[in-house]
Length: 80
Image (tube, rainbow, N blue to C red):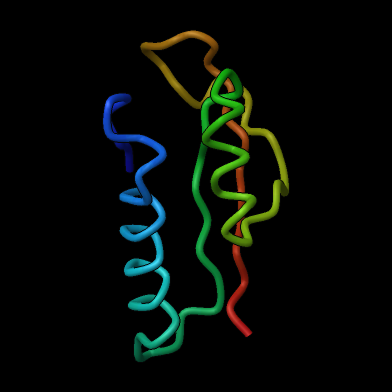
């Protein structure tokens, strides 16, 4: 998921993510958690997801093959 730089800070990413999370939380069969990867150089994206309840759980080394840095943070959100 991404929002082009000129359109950031307008709530578009938050609204899109809220719709995705609402669909996931009401899905049958039940979805217990959702996870995603964020490139370790993208601290703004990590903060964005953490504001929406995601928690950094691990780092996946050499996750990306064609971009640098190749490592990714793994973030998870658990549905209650």
